[in-house]
Image 1 (cartoon, rainbow, N blue to C red):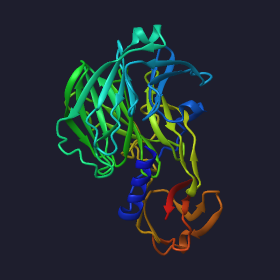
Image 2: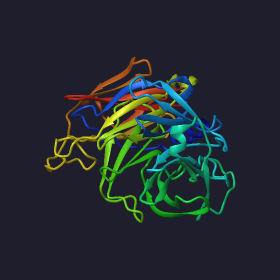
Image 3: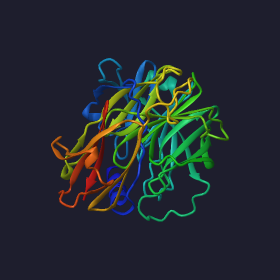
Image 4: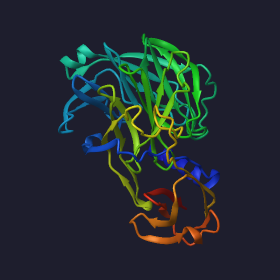
Length: 393
């Protein structure tokens, strides 16, 4: 997944000038860091909560093993090997009352013709450290071209159970959206039918449908590793992406966020994968986080900029960055907060530039003198600051 990610990051910054919006809640921190994951789980991808433990796996090319993690010590307490399958590109986990489902459908280049979901009996999982799985082999009904043309829109890293079906969400490296496909939970050869699309403007990497609240949570990140979490209410088997959507900020900095699961009606665990780019000074360890869903009507912000239940306008901020070329940075700032100044810092936190609001004559910043590295554009408001990363190549 690393090379695919970096190819897209380079493509977006050098050619398209990727834009993104950030909708942030400053009422409270809803995300808390729990622990770094053990080194053995540096490529943790899927995540579920079952039998009092978190269960995860590593992604492509690793062992066909499910790992149990204690929710207090965050150590691996058990390893369960799936004896009759390989880990070609495992990307997500989901479950129902009887089975654990493993999604072997990672497909960056769109060339795979062996996409699968594996069913593992929960009874067998509880009673043995070596189990077998039933296979569901599938293809996408509308995919007709399997040529390697670079990163494709046929990758997938997220799925969930909805009633009697499995719903797969694609990770679209070109379109930066997602499509929802459905499969039967029965085994055998199947054709995945598309039922919905969502232009999420990011890369979807995980999903969890909470049967207690009937809410779907999907996670992902932008091409500069800004994680996001979206709650979707009233999903149906014929229409996944309804109008009832809330986008939450995840105040955890940059992270290659990969897995999500719930433990009750408003508590979710999130996992991230190890990511390294030494020439840019980036090293992000695999980590585990906890997210608490804000209670409705408490004044915490939603994407639409109104207070839940009260209709009171909030100080929502949207910042969009563009790089039309390697020597310029262009930003759009939409906020009702009072702006004081802006600055640029390097990855060590050293301040390289600083301008008061009265000194800002335009929203175009010359970065031609910067060497190739990651930097942070910082806006100082009357009561807070907001920093956005960008890369100079």
